[in-house]
Image (cartoon, rainbow over all chains, first blue to last red; front, side, top):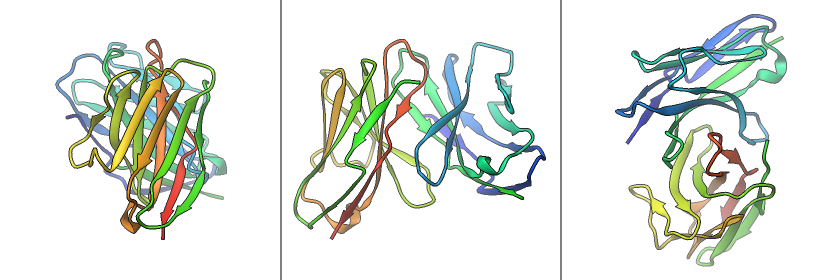
Length: 115
Length: 115
């Protein structure tokens, strides 16, 4: 089975500053997808950003970007210009190639944006 | 993104009874659905994965006879918690994806309380 590890249980950042959340994973697959999901207090899971393993270019989505290091099996999330609405649990997730059906989550990082 | 509707959002049942949770994909055909359990301030634990028309694949340690999963159509999967006990109280989340989407879309979750 694949494992996803987030080593930072809690983090905080000042509003408008930048913060990076770490994620490492372990897999023997060569083709897979990585995701960052946000879970606010409502507990609705919201997709923040996704990365295809076969793409070398790091994904970006407005204020959110990733640093994908395939050889190191590392997938960190950078949030720029942090906003109060970014306060939430953030989960890193792994999914096998599109024909696979396995989808695993990391342990989560609780991010608090301080006004 | 696509919409996944999960119902009910909250349910309270008596110990020993069964409760059914529904997960519907409203605007796409969900070839694969995932069921998760989430304890407070913890990550999502994958319980089972189901493909439409097939038996669900359960994760190690999940009781198949207790957590019955049915995925009889491309838009509906159900999770039935049989003979519920207080320790089954938790937050249950479903997610769904179609064959061409690399993203899994999440329901709103169901908070189950067994008294």
